[in-house]
Length: 422
Image 1 (cartoon, helix red, strand yellow):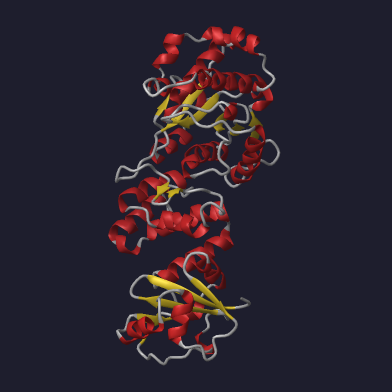
Image 2 (cartoon, rainbow, N blue to C red):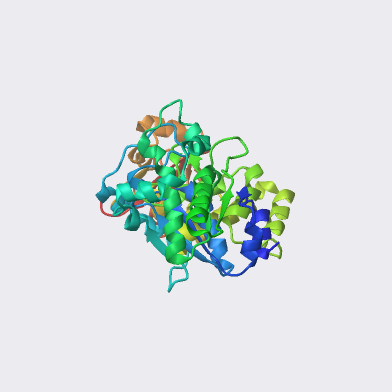
């Protein structure tokens, strides 16, 4: 077994592979591709599995191809879908492609020809219908297509001929990439197995060549939920759709039962060594309350997607809200992060501002009388220091990082007062 395949199996990337794949991988450098659906303006966490797969192939000396579905995106893949998706315009698809290309570059090195990015609209859009049906469609039987899981799962609820034809288009993609780039491996999720093997068969029939497929398992949480979902919906890589803070929190809040799986899949840490995954999980097992494994995972993935400085700010903001910080060593950017995550009020100065007024202005209480009652009961904190003086006035000495006052009511309700222009 090659070192790459053994590592992929240990990390949990291998659900199934075509016969002969191991020998093919051991034969030298290969070109591998994965297709991505551009029907959304941003990639989401579910897309990280195939991206990480391609990343591992590139690090091992192979060449990855990211195939953007500018052509197939006009049709829609029925795999894993309960109903037909609305078709997007060509302009919307083009805009989505451009946004996703930027995100791809955070996982793969596209300099030179170390990795390629292709759009299947290049060959699908100009393809003539009669020629396509004659040259490609004749190699597919209806009986075979009906046996594919992506088709069977939709027969009862309804499947249009448009989506039924998707399998032929994806198989044609494989044929084109084999001819143009000598691509001999397609990777994806296990829900793509039927489409991938259809492409393998098409290349064999038309070119008499052996190509392969490798699929990763579909990831679910230990609680049985779909990976990459939160209470508010999908987690996106675009900071405009999912804030870097919420992105970071998704990983920090990983269930102890899942953190080992996620580290293997989404971290590039080696298995062994002082900084390896095995050592990190062993330390986590000894003291799970420290959540060192979750923090390591959150820092690595967030830094890769959003950059180092943003990650430092969101990690510091997380530490502030969980009372794990030193007010004398606050990262200034942490409060900019908090300003977008918790209730905030902006004032021109805090000098002489009464605490009761600050609580009202931030929206943490409905009235001054409620503010006084909360203070008297010991439920109000300024910069994590309990305050019981209802006549407490704020001043410059209360400012953190030059312009911020952190307010807290009870155990978890936070508010932020910032000095600046209203």
